[in-house]
Image (cartoon, rainbow, N blue to C red; front, side, top):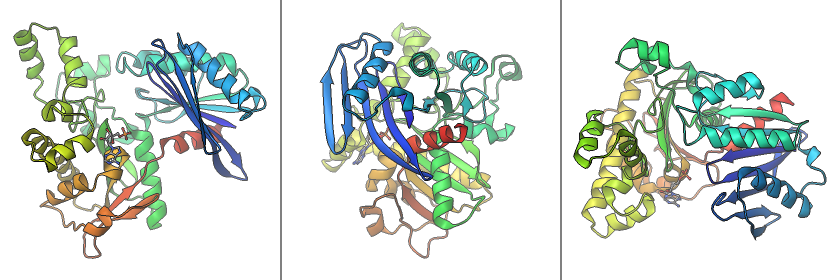
Length: 392
Ligand code: AMP
């Protein structure tokens, strides 16, 4: 059995898979949340949902509780049956592929913690604890940054003092790589081609675009950190960097506080003043709310601008534009508004297919579109699971 773990500062999401005759089957999934606050564990198994209110004062107890509950519910007979654990790890610095966790990988993760202070420290803590509980399993770190290590220098160097890159690693890393990798493989499987040029819009609460050239990441919108690029649920995306200094002195706050506001109070939430969730903003927009209209127009314009830039980098030879993640998979309004803003590309949306329900994926461009358009459901967990299996 393989356990896939995605941890945050107060939660651990997990799913358990088995590999039968080279077919990966999901057995169960769940979450331990409100760690350090209160504590709750939920596990879905065999169409049932089991929920427990349990004190979870730290990550160690949360992990212990998850393993005990899996045992109590007879989902696993023996925790030693878990042969591999895969961890979604946000920042792997310059590591280019999923890696078996040893001291050198842990050191690199520690180094990358300063670039992802919200994400890497809890992941490290969780890795440490699972290694204690499952000493004989293979532990594999899968990085959101790894897929983008193929980007050419011209796309990852910032126009600042070159010493910042050489001495401090200040460069574009990019994120959501596990999702982009999955989507690209899926698209190539659907169309039966390899080495494709795609522009993938991963539009979730966090959101970024990736352009692939010959099947490899060529450019992406997030940067040194996941704050850059398009506007997101609560993050601002690209802005004039001087705003930070200006607002710090205006509001008498320090840079860290302004950074926090740009991460948590900006983007769709900041502009709409309603919510970071596009569903509520779309409701406001339909009811004529001016700021909701502005938020949606701004959001879709930013995405369209990057698509055009990426198409230019691909010398116009774009095979497909693909929408994925919470908003990309589910919001027909956002997809249509983005496509409607792509004047320099020969793209034609099939509006019925854009609105249609689907299971894994659906082509939503019309037959006379010069570029294919798809909505594809992402599956980061299965990518992590496959990577772990490759180490077993
Ligand atoms: P993710 O980070 O991929 O889980 O995406 C979360 C976001 O997706 C939410 O904040 C919503 O804005 C959006 N979302 C989720 N479900 C739907 C839906 N059914 N329709 C429209 N947007 C959705």
